[in-house]
Length: 289
DNA sequence: CGTACGACCTGCCCGC
DNA sequence: TGCGGGCAGGTCGTAC
Image (cartoon, rainbow, N blue to C red; front, side, top):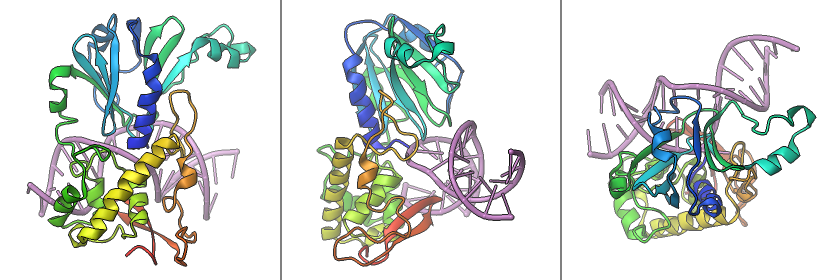
């Protein structure tokens, strides 16, 4: 579910709740998500302050006063929700009024920041993950060490991408999905960026010319910034920390647009749907070459 | 090494 | 109404 823009929206939503107060309590309601949670997670979080919240690719990094960092990945269906008990109570009908903490069965980890505010990690499919590791070497963590550059960072350029794509034997779609090439893109934004740059996802990565890669690089940046501005894409699951949807799905041009007329002005093509690497690709049969 | 594929999970939607 | 199949924003281990 969440690609870079959605993860960034979650990060930004959490920031106002970071201050000098310590984590008061942690509830861990199962031993694992995709992998085992740190067995001593409670001990390492309680009485510790969250100093800052950063993002690397699709990982949220909670910088802690204990010189450790908590890494959170939302997988396909994960959410981080900030729950305020006062609002929570207001929504509840009579039968729930004696239970101030409505617990969903997929609420796996609950971090209490104040007596009435908590961060809830909810993830039905449990493809997400949480770990805690020393901040000093956090970028050597196995989840982060092989990631390519941030697409919205200074290291990402058309020169860089051209070199990376040049020797690939796979499709350009597969190359952009590879997190070691560029970090943070997923199925939606890869396909949207390819549509913007009029390149078919089926093209071999090495066949793209410099001009095409320049356009593709600009399109990746453009679509990510626009999606962040719109609050992310909410097709089914995504919600921000307040439980609200984003609005970028209204701006999707190809993803989930099978059989629709191409939204490119001056193009009479139709959006196609094919499988690539077990994932669905969408592209225009006319303007994407 | 690069590449492709199955596996990991639950929930939802569709067709029969 | 119920059931089976297929699908979903991601990533890793394995096999070639």
